[in-house]
Every structure is written in C-alpha cells, then in structure tokens.
Image (cartoon, rainbow, N blue to C red; front, side, top):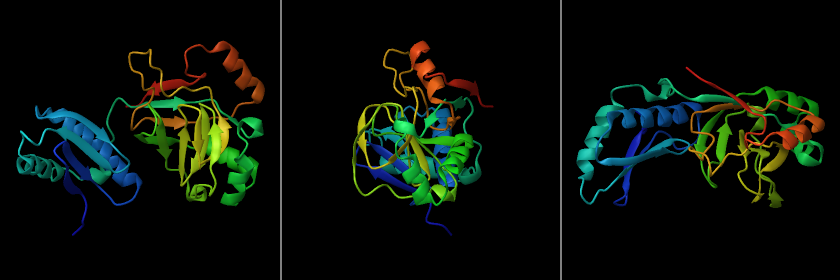
Length: 245
C-alpha cells in the first residue's frame, strides 16, 4: 500500500493530483503522463491543466462542479495505468543548446565543481554531455527547471545570493539546471552562458520549452558564443531541435 498518488482540492479553483512528496524521475514522469491523459479525456469541466515537479493540476470551477464527482473520475483514471512507468507524452522536443562554460560568462563553474568534488574539466564534460528533461516551468515566463543530473550534482544552493545573473545563464543546484529567462538574483551557481531565450513574447508559442522536452548543453568556445550573438536573430541562440517519438 502506498500513500501516493493523492488527490486534493485547491480551494474552489481546481484539483491537484500529487504523485510523491519529493522530486523523483518516476513521479515527474507520472505527472507529465497523467496530464496528457487528462487532456485526452477532454472533460468539459476542466478548463486548463498544468504540471509541477510531481503534480498535475486541473483547473475546475468547484463551485459548479461537485468535487467528489471529479475525484471519482480521477481515481478511475489513476487506476487505469501504472503512471510511474508510463510512456512520456508524444510530440516532445529534444534541444541542443550551445553553451560556453566557465570564464567570466560562467564565473561559478569552478566553485560548483569544488562543491561536487570534481575538477572543472570533468564537470564540463559531464554536464555538457548530460541529457536532461524539462521537469516543470516556473518562477519566470517560460523558465525551465531541468533534471535530473547524476548524484554528483546533488549540491545545495549557495548560502548567499548572487545579485544578478543575465538572461540565458545556465545555473546548477540539487541535480537540476535552469536557463534564466531574465536578469535575475539567484542562490544557484552560475556555470555557463547561452543565447537561448526561453520566453519569446512575439512568437505564436511564447514559451520556447514545454514540460517533458529534453535538452543537452554542448560546450562551445567563447569565440563561437560571440559569433552566435552576432548572427542569430531567432532568439534560439544557435540551438537545434528534433521531435521525439
């Protein structure tokens, strides 16, 4: 018998289905797959869905839709599948985002490597070849939380606060990466820099990434980074993409 998943109402605004009490790959997989299944059901009462790290939220007006009836439907759907090992939704994308590591553009690479107990070159090799998933979008428009990296990178946030890192900064903590949408203060360590814009408000789809997308951050030189900055006008910072099956 397990305590998960759990179904809870969120005031009168909707229902939250939570698959774990802490981040894990199976729980994130479950949240993504379950959201896709709810969307496929096309229940008229559900006006919007979203996911967090380990939960699926359904926006439902519970002042007009009985909460227990909605919970019964969700319980039936939960019993239909092992969501923790369910296939991820189709139509996801794999992005390759050119990144310069270290130098003045990623000034805390050496510090992050020291905390992780590896040398900086080994840190670049591992992070630049790792493939991570967009676990959730949050904090700023289109901003992805991505993971999970190997246990080596289960490093804490720094105790102090960096006053500001620039848009496109690649930062690291607790086995996750973030590419910042805007110039932002942060407690995460700034290890690299991209020209990748996660929020492009003039595009048909303003959020470049979606939960479930996957990314790699291949290492490039400072000269290559500068060249991308001069030539790329798309906001994608030289990134390439492919559709995952």
